[in-house]
Length: 115
Length: 113
Image (cartoon, rainbow over all chains, first blue to last red; front, side):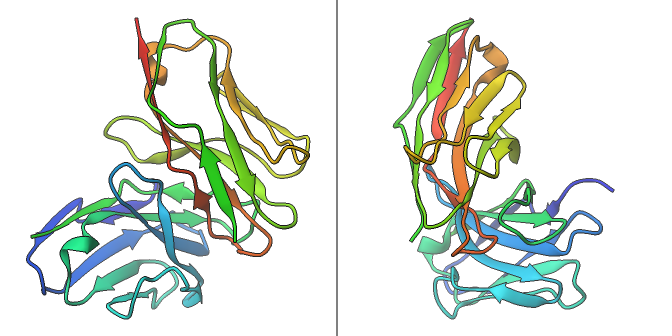
């Protein structure tokens, strides 16, 4: 159907709280990616899924960050004990297949602000 | 590891001017190269891509040629419009990094009428 969707579009939380960010990929896309974009910077890779499994989670900054994709479609990025430095735009992307030549389609992002 | 370097911005041009945004990369093997664009208030969208050396990607009047000898993928447009005002990101996905994209820092382009 439509493009990649992400909810919420904005999230304000307090330091130390837990947050969940949701991504709905394009229907039929097998690969799903999470990136983080700080102000004035390019997106930085966090994790990607091929189907239900995390194929590469080497970009997760520490063990407070975790992501799941239990049914191979929707994914949730979970951040525990949030810190002010986690404030950024979290982008989700999907592609039909995983491969270096594949086009990734991005969602509008979730803007996270940790106070 | 892989890296992408873009020319520093911001870039300000008058309408109908020629645009070049430089992009060079470091990667092993044969990466695929992309230009993404982020219009004000919108998400990232693919502008063009090239998947092998000497390929030229083109879209909406923009072009970029994959130059392996100079490890470059410079973005060009012959005549910019006000509607081209946006942030442009060069990116690559490489053989050693799988499907992940490595982005440059972005170049803010403003086109004045």
